Image (cartoon, rainbow, N blue to C red; front, side, top):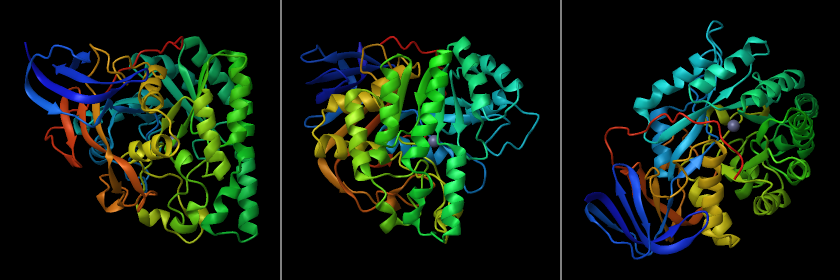
Length: 460
Ligand SMILES: [Zn+2]
């Protein structure tokens, strides 16, 4: 056999091991991996000596919304940013009615899913979808099995004061149905009425500086909402995945329920491990996200709970906005969200491996393997023979300074702008295709595909 690619002499990292060795790729799959394996002839040989060779990042929390106008992400731009950041698979969101603007009352969740599947031709990396359940009507639950047939096996609801927020009553009914279907429930957890009253109070007090924003959604709002939801999760038996955990108080609530029930998992996001609320002093509203950036102690709590397993995934919550919408006078007029898909791996590597001495296997576990397992993608997040050759070559010896002008995303800013990190993505392969090389996209036709997911088993 003549293989497509041999990657040789790299420091190979999986969630369980780290060793110097080689990987053989053919027809988009990993054929073999190991130390002293017999290498076939190959069309291309890449010497990865001195570099980390790891699975591509699986980012289960990404927003690429076309609506409303301020949300600027397109599949073309954001999937290119993903490839440059070593992200080979992400999970975006599909909305009832076609898109987040809910413009078509006659359209349902399956239309929203199809709307996103149609972006496949513009995708430079693979992607899947979570369904969002935001219409509080009985018909919503009837859409769940239809979505599962389309390969969408996880469903998000927002316990939040957003336009798409839903009530605890609706959440309970939906969780029951999701449990019957064996699907995964994702919840945004911030108590809506507390967020509303604190926001109004800050407005009355004229506290309009960006530094004041986190006080409108303190840890209490998150911990209280997580507790409400987890009571319903325990009652219904549904598989629960808590999105964007930010603080010690909420992580402790999750940990408490995990003592009794095994179907509770949760993530944090890169920014909650890499920045605290003081970032607003220098970056104004750009880091305005929800839940907000927290204290230095909460940053350390994210690492403590990742280590304990309370939190098992690090995602980005990549959200795309033009700078003009973020840079407004009062924080309450600025939208929530920040882009980071291009920088998440180097930033988390700097915070976890370089600064805090966590292992590379820990990084691969929380950024690749566990997100893939959690969401039913057995071909992703691993270097096992027979799986997709989604591989990142990462140069931990190369320092670079993050520069927002190099953003491939449609967002023109980065909350990490000016930050120097030790480690850079050198090459990104998607199913054996070299997509990104040394900061450039090097493939002409977008090779990404929509990934039809299985209902995940959470036994591992
Ligand atoms: Zn999000």
